[in-house]
Image 1 (tube, rainbow, N blue to C red):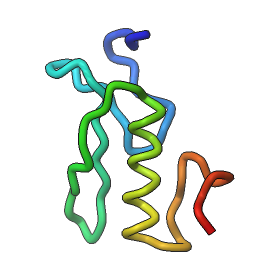
Image 2 (image 1 turned 180 degrees about the horizontal axis):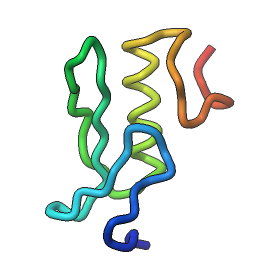
Image 3 (image 1 turned 180 degrees about the vertical axis):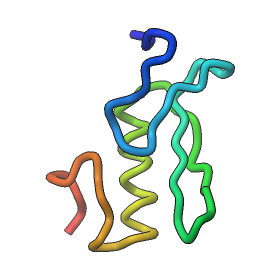
Length: 71
């Protein structure tokens, strides 16, 4: 299901790329943006954001799926 125009994702770091018609993931660290990638599903994009956040921020990462975080 495609989102309505102007509607953003419910997940942190995930937004809809209208040009490419895919979910876009970008994360910021030290005032620099890091492009994580584009994904077909919103959930896959959110999980990719979680992986990048865990890598950058470790135990202080704010995750979309905190219950499924690797120990």
